[in-house]
Amino acid sequence: MGSAASHPAAGNERFFAVPGPLPPGEPKPWPRHDYIIVGGGTAGCVLASRLSEDPNTTVLLIEAGKNFQGDVPTKIPFTFANLFRTERDWDSYTVPQRYLDNRETYWPRGKILGGTSATNASIYHRCCPEDFNEWVSLGAEGWSYADLNPYFLKAEKFHQSSKHPGVNPANHGAYGPWQTSYPSETAPINGYVIEACRELGMRNIEDINAGRGHLGVTQLLGTIDSNGRKSSTATAYLSDEVLKRPNLTVGTEVMIERLVFSDVTPPGQPPKVIGVEMRTSRNAQLYCTGVNREVILCAGAVATPQLLMVSGVGPAQELQRLNIPVVQDLPSVGRNVIDHVSSGPIPFRVKSGSLTYDFLRGTVSSTFEMLKWRFFGTGPYASLDYSSTAFVRSTDNALPYYANSITGAPVNDHSSGPGAPDLEIRWVPQAVFGDGFPKPTTGTEGVTFAAVALKPESRGRIMIKSNSVWDAPIIDPNYLSTESDMNVLVRGIRLLLRLAHTDPVASKLHLKGNSINTSSPWWPGVGDPNLITDREIKEMLRRTALPAWHPVSSARMGQSPQDSVVDPSLRVHGIVGLRCVDASVFPTQVSGHPCAVVVAVAERAADLIKASAASRL
Image (cartoon, rainbow, N blue to C red; front, side, top):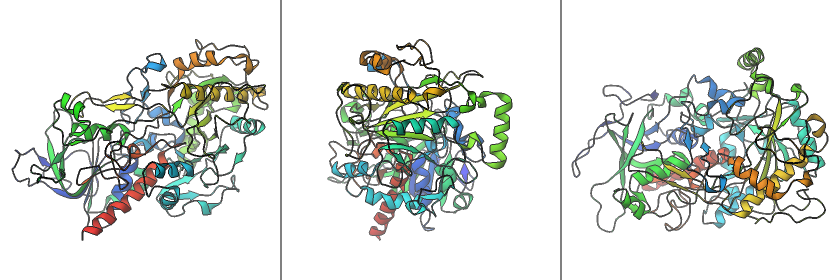
């Protein structure tokens, strides 16, 4: 016990399960733990560390992916996209999206200890304070920004940068396990785009995480340590010291197949979780282990509702159709899925390769920069793909979405408050085509923009194909299903076109043409952005729009079991001993990058769980 195990094996000191199952009604002499955490991802690593702080509490953490130790690719901040469609990724796809020309879209999901925090873009963003006050208005009492801010600070260890003297360390955590810092360098094109944003009327934000407003352009803080390495929640919370705790067991490459409920439930009493069943592969031996207190699902916005449903917790009619015995009828399981949606990459050629990081595709340059990163923790590989971004409101009439006071495409305001954005303009200092595949060839040089709708109206679903977790679930985010969502992105594209045609950026790009031609991966530019029509942009979006990879709310938090899955203490409605702690519990979408929010939710959840255990004494 106390270190990562690749699979349960009898006779091993890390043995945590026994072959099973037993017939109903039989005594279950299973190994038992106080807590079983399902999913060693962004939230699961936090909970495993915090709950095992009490040496009298036993914790079992189960992760379907591999261990993180020694995995160099997950430690390089700038190359997160290289992890897509590898063994560290579930390689998931949506069903054909009706409003995106019936295209299937790619959904990366981390499959490694640390989860998506080990495979994402390393952006540290607490999102907008108004987002969490909106959560409270939706029934999530105790989850306001004032409630969560102490947990943001508790998790973080901030490294001050001399290049950012306006950032006050007092607004950041100093002693947490999760390290954050600004990159030691960014590509030159980044500064020109920031200047263009200011010329369009956006204010500069020194620190997007200080809780003083989110509307404007900002340089982003990364989950990067002082050595230029990505800090996932695995590297942060599962240090060697933590893994040596005798009361913590970590099992990797193990899939939880089903939650096990008590065979006998007294009349009028809710069902109770007593353990889990697991395998190392679809046809391997089934193993079982028991729980004394709680099973905590931290498997993410896709796998958490999937596991609930295959275990009999979810919409009764759908479960019955798949011959799954209904343990608890919860119609909201897998419903209300909300994802940020992007225009897709819009690349422009640059006039000089010295402005971007495209040179990293060259073998000699890449090798040299990789050595610099390995030995000094500096250079492009220690930077962020998205080192800066702009947050705006699509309803802001002060921004030049349309010229000559034209009203333009109508949008519904779903922002969480007057100071909160509903649209993000982001860029990367490289040429990017499609969803990052195929890769551009050596010598291809550009800067790539995208517009992202942060508060979409569209709602999707996670469904199951069968009663087995080994069958991939059905992912249907229902992108751009409303006219307002489409129009938010239309406005976003108009704004990024203005940026591209604003000095000093325009002087750095090849801009020509007056129409959209998406048969080429390059955006040809427009001599006058006013000449492009909304209709043209919408036709393009149906061919190019992509997920922004921030799905939430598939097991959303709320007061009523009719329209939510967990209560404000994250306990599954009507089930004893079962909680969910990950992005699936968000009451609604946040207006930014959600990884730091998941960590803060897990930090607060750990305190809630500890308090619940103490109340039983």
